[in-house]
Length: 214
Image 1 (cartoon, helix red, strand yellow):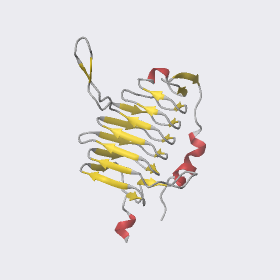
Image 2: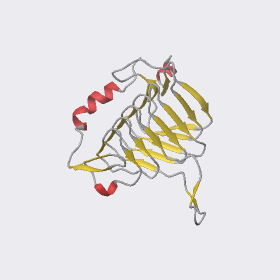
Image 3: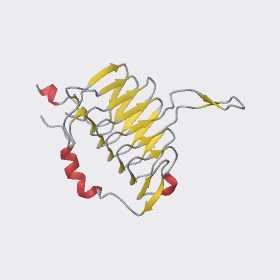
């Protein structure tokens, strides 16, 4: 029982680990419930029990990470998904990592988001026949909030303290906009400067809310 209480990974009923040929790296002291697959932490609790994960690459964890109900996660062999402290992925969000995705501390994704660093298929220039890379890295800064139904494509990079509006498409480097910005749209553009989520007022509540309890 003592060993079970220290087990860092919790898989909720209805969520399936379809393949696990890779590894999970915990940066820091292991403790119970650091990672929750299929955790029902949102307002709505009903699920279709279709959450699943394929973990054939490396999942590196730097704190508490929660995957909500009906979320999906795919890490290809030789790929690296790095997640920070207090990362949460709301219902039906999908993460597809073919190369490298890095997400900072205190980052939340709304429901139905898609984060993918690959185009899946080979693309080439029709004149020169040059083959273009279809796997491009993603890095999301700390203290980011990604609105519901947003798509994060390869080559996306955001600075710290970035807010992303709902139904947005991110597909390039936005760090030149600086910190404390709101971006959004299809594709995303700068909407407002000098705006930030008040994380400090929510930190204690979020820590408790996203912590798995026996």
